[in-house]
Structures are given as C-alpha cells and as structure tokens.
Image 1 (cartoon, helix red, strand yellow):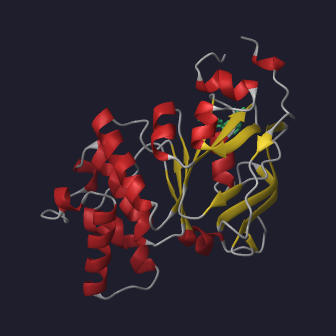
Image 2 (spheres, protein in one colour):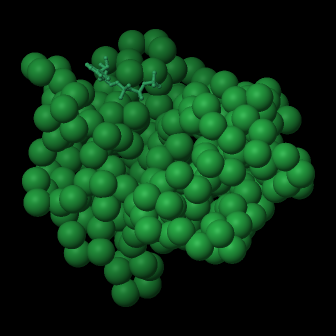
Length: 269
Ligand SMILES: Nc1ncnc2c1ncn2[C@@H]1O[C@H](COP(=O)(O)OP(=O)(O)OP(=O)(O)O)[C@@H](O)[C@H]1O
C-alpha cells in the first residue's frame, strides 16, 4: 500500500473540555528538527491526568521524538520549537531548570538501564541527591516504590544485591521504581516492554494499570494489543504528523482516518 497517498493535514485530534477534564500536560505547535530533517510537525495535544495515553505508529513516524521533547531529552540533539505546558510553565522555555523539571516528569527507556549498584542504591540515589538523608524515610521510599512497581516481593530479602543481576523484566520494573521514587506527576515510557518476554510484559502492563491511580502515563508502543489493553487514549503518528488522537476504543474500533484504519488493521506499509 502506498502510504504517501494519505493526506497528512487531514487530522482528527481530540480536544478536551478543561471544565470536565484535568490536563497533566499540553503541547502547542510542537515541531522538532534534527538538522534539516523536520522530524515532527505540529503536535498540539492534551494529556489527561491519571490516564494512560499510547503513542502508536510505524517505525520512524516520530513517536520517540515527540515523547523525548516532553521532558527535554532532545536538548543538544534536536531543535524543538513550540510549547509544552505543565502547571502553567512552558517546559520548552530556556528559563526552565531541566533537572528540577525531570523530578516531575520522569522517563523509563526501552532498554532497562539500572546503575551497576545495589537495588537499594538504584532507588535511593536521586532521592538522596534531592536531600532525603533519613534512613527510615529512605527505607520507606524503597519499599513503596518497589511495591508500586510490583517488584517488592521478589527483591525484599536482597536489597543490597547488584541490580544488574536481576532479570531483564525485573530490571525494567526496578527502573520504573527508580523513576517513581522521585514521585513525579508524569511518567514517560518509551517502549518499556519491547525488550521483554511476554510474562514480564504482562507484569509491566499490570504495573502500569496500578500506577495510573497516582500518575499520568504517556507510552510509546509498537504493540497494538498492548495499546488497546492498557491505554485510555491513543495517538496515531504517521511521517511526523499526529493523524488521529482519540479514546483508545474509538481508534481501534471506529477510526476516523483511513491511515489509522489501515495501521490498526495491519494493512499498512
Ligand atoms: N538522534 C537522532 N538524530 C537524527 N535523526 C533522528 C534522531 N532520532 C530520530 N531521528 C529521525 O527522526 C525521525 C523520527 O524518528 P523517531 O525515532 O522519533 O520515530 P519513532 O516513531 O519513535 O520510531 P521507532 O518506532 O522506530 O522508535 C526519523 O526520520 C529518524 O531518523
């Protein structure tokens, strides 16, 4: 199928009523350039608080580029214009303290990347940097973070063991625990389960369903079933454009755009 036939300006982007729904994050006219490569075009999207939003689309469609712009991970790599509004502040402004901002908007990457330190130190490292020194408080943070990431029962008896000795799925849940130890508002996840086996993937998905009680989650995934299982909203990306953004059940059952329909039904590319 010739993907070039889709009209990239013909979009169906969900608008939320601010009176009814609380937004955790809003982007306005976000554009991203890698040198001359205009990799992402106007993504004016809103992300509802305490919901999971999935970003789907073919390889190279700009999902990670967009996601990474939401907590300034593209600094020094790409030029990003437009705004990312969070609690009345534009995260994309040069005045923002990026280190402080990332305490509120955390990220979990595709490949688990624990520090080669103990499980305990992985969780407490940034927390201690942030001024928490009390042992009891640290122990409480370790326990609650690991419980939230559904890892506590598996590691509670060997918190001083090396994190890199854990399985891939456990390492990824540790990385989730490490991110939530800082008590962010928003968790950005870039294909967090793509390197994991199906059982570990299901555990990550169950963890996400629990986490959304307290966090807003935006996840990039190639896994269609995963998007339909876990997310409340889905945005479909194509060639650097967001073609359609709606409730997940609408995207998967009544997509408004032909490109979306072809993608979710597997007739794409
Ligand atoms: N660090 C980078 N430097 C230069 N170009 C990049 C970089 N990262 C991404 N790009 C380009 O930006 C475009 C979008 O890539 P991006 O990784 O955001 O897509 P994606 O939808 O996340 O793909 P995938 O699903 O394969 O991860 C592509 O043309 C890609 O080559």
